[in-house]
Length: 376
Image (cartoon, rainbow, N blue to C red; front, side, top):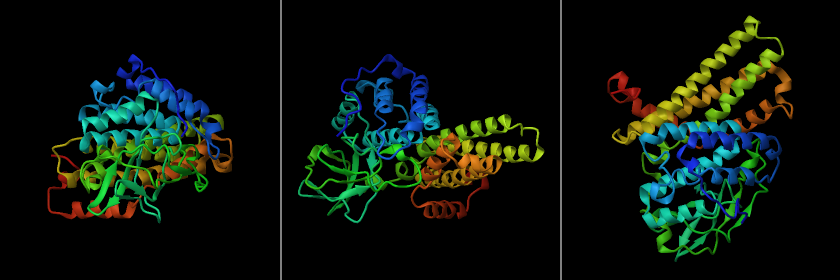
């Protein structure tokens, strides 16, 4: 396993996560072009996250954090942090969102001792992650040992203690094992974008799992509202990239002297409206998902509607910027080409049709129309 940093001293800047995220973003944006290669390791960027206190930030105060994103009071700040990092590097944003997701799940279903395991990883400068996707060799927990593997394991090689889901006789359980001895393989990650996310597949066969590394009870991982509701964090990362694309779009029109063309202005205006749709849905989803008194079904439905609306808006922006810039926006090293490729890949989240269907089923129930929009 590759460690991002051997010795990390968490600075007082952890109390200002927005400023910390901006500093990390400067580093990540500068490195993003050279990270757009197969098997790239974002070690400098992860070390920056650690050095700025952002690995600790989701943890509670007694473990060196501020509980960032763990409740409604800090959801807005986490949204800002994720936007900032995602605007610099979608791959880094993906890795950091996975880390926050792991902390959130352990905070909800785990024990103080398990939170200390995550704190120890942050102390060592290492991210955590959530690895759930199953391949043909489904991961199983048999007599205290793992059998099988996972696919789409973002961060494989730099993450040592991810949150895994595994099958047991009693159902799906969450685990927090040390996977230093896992066999990782990045060779199959040949998709369009997100090349710096270190996504691959891993075989965990033979790794022992202690009782203290089993989180919660069977079925907890898929419980509402954290399972579907937590998707707002992914939207926040993607929103940062979409905003960066719009900044590049504006710059492109100015450099080519096309800002005075009414056809170009109309197309740009459409993209601005779509960006605002994405931004409003992301903010709404974050507020709703972290508002615990709401019914779980309402949270799931509204976040799923946000996923659908964001996807439509993002693809609309991409279409308009490519029409405006033509072939040049599809040629490396144009940053538009790289960001579009990464964003198009990251937008492909699992089960979009099922998510929309679930939201529609909820919205079809008899209730005041304003309730369908999450208003009270």
